[in-house]
Length: 155
Image (tube, rainbow, N blue to C red; front, side, top):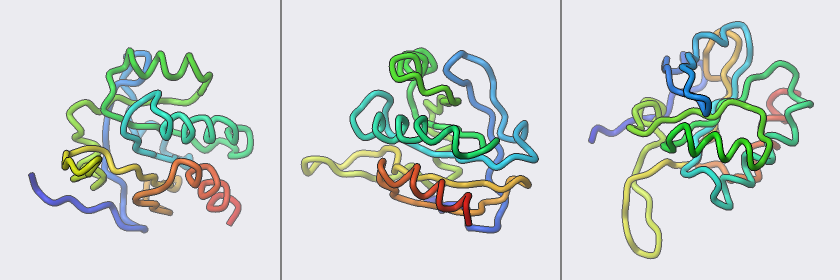
């Protein structure tokens, strides 16, 4: 596997098209002219990922027309259950081959209980209206994602 790096602040975010929780194709380019939070999480409906997603759901009314896109390796059906169960109300995208995660440099080696494996490194990126990275938060904690987004948008 090639070593990937996260897109630098000020650089254009990698383009992508993925299926959402409803099986519909979503293109990053379709949000041109709006700010977009692209966040990567390891697995739908696990404790940290639920904390993160529900935190973003809870601030959705405070972020104007900023788009939230959550990306994980889960299949659309699992994302739909996650969305329905927690009433998230924002777009969840399926990246089962982790191609987009690799483009953003967030697919890497992880370790749990001494076992090493490849997976999503929880990270978030705020893109400006032109699709450039305005803020990058690699290895972000679930609780910090909504706080960092609000802080960045109010700056």
